[in-house]
Image (cartoon, rainbow, N blue to C red):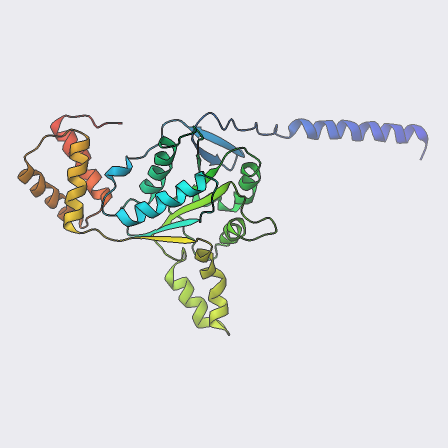
Length: 291
């Protein structure tokens, strides 16, 4: 090919490369991790979005789970201090304060920090679990310690994103970064539907091996903290705590009767039901709730 033709071809290739570079999105800006104590991982944009007003309750208002509360706070305290700590799976009954306790434990540790060191909470949505390795790459080089939090974590049939979670928690060559710990909430102790596990067991040549990979996901969590349905006394104690905290004035006998009627109409007793009753009561009394 003549030299002139080659030169023209090279020029066209250079222009094509420049055009491709222009249509590529600019790299995501580095997160300002001092902007807030809490962030949400935006997988689509590849950025950590700061959350300046976190939806959480005071840890003292979470009743009926004293034992698991103490265990979680102690584990979080050790992690914040740079000591060994476990990934935590908070599982069990709906509405009993699993996610509230995870967020409250984070706030408690930061409030009690003597040296001003701030523990960061990063929430990753369930549908973004397959981007977990990319998020870990960002967090492991940061000069902070992070609680990576996923609310309502579970996996359905044909969902393979749990493999990303397994590798991020303990697997892989590098393993979990020393400055990251993983807290998750779920209604399922094994994070997978029971019929999915039973089906794998019934159709496999070696049932135990077929189930092992899926069930072993929950084994990556060193702490399993169970939340169970509360008693009537626990439910009423939750109501009393909310009423006192928010300064709502009502005759105790009337309050008890209305709270029990509310639970009966909802068909359950839980921390969530207690909070919903409190919101309704405050609205009827014309009283705003504390932030």
